[in-house]
Length: 449
Image 1 (cartoon, rainbow, N blue to C red):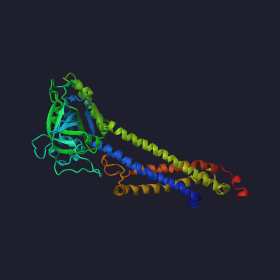
Image 2: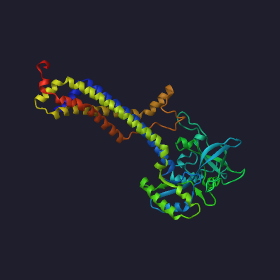
Image 3: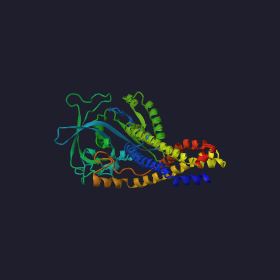
């Protein structure tokens, strides 16, 4: 009991201990705020990629695509762990507006809007047909004409709040889409002067996935039209990928392995069929593997940030160590008295480590509480700074970020708090051992009494 009483007495009587407490609180505060924001950004980015692709993708990077997908789709849907499957065409095209001779290179996706929405969150990103994706390719003025959906960043600019100024209905615009059709061997499907397929589509909606690269470089057209434009309709229909949605409760990695096993068996069954060699280029990936190249950069930044804050934590260890060396140097008489009445080596070490633990506990608690209060008001603070000084943490006209992430992960908060306490104990261990080794005859000399 005396160890706890002495520890608390040292805390409120030795003003220098406040330095260690403030250092811990500031370090914990900064780590809580930055890690919450960064973790929120990474989690949000991953969620957007997951929503964009579905749970699993059976696909190829080849522009030629692969055949015999219809029977495999039926096999997938007959299982007890797959909810929906959607074939997709992915290629590149040139688009130009009516009356313009300049073309812009974009990625083209051919989808069945309703089927693709059952696999992904495609319909949630639509502005005009969010509740009925089956009509997403029907232009408002002429529903019988072929429609197209354009990535929102291709048409509108975000304002300073990251919002888009949509019109009441889709603008009347005709877009000419041009593709180079390819044979199953990868050669041009057409010869002579007529090398391309061109079709005019009419703007029917905008897609906002929240992924800047996608929203600024993608046009969506009906699946059948894309298949024709890319030359994938004859002689054997081909696609670029099958996007798959698992039933609730299915582990994504385990489900992807099952799909991979099914594909391997199906691939063997197609041996000897025309163009079956294209199936060898098909890969089965979970959404994380499929979008790994896109997400890797942000994940590395998160790891680097954790390492940097680990180095910042070392500063706290040194601050606590210096403070405890100073406290020990001024408490030699207390140490001598304790040892003279029978306090052991472990008792003295325990006293100062308990003192360090109290500093870590109080400092981390203050830092976490201050961090939570700051995070709760972080978006209001940014709004005030923008109104008064024109400052934004991220320029919303450039970055596809809405509100700054402010919801903490309480598991991470517990880890940060525990690490702060351990850092304090690490900083105090050497001064504590030094104090415990002192002999009463050295600390209780007449000249010191």
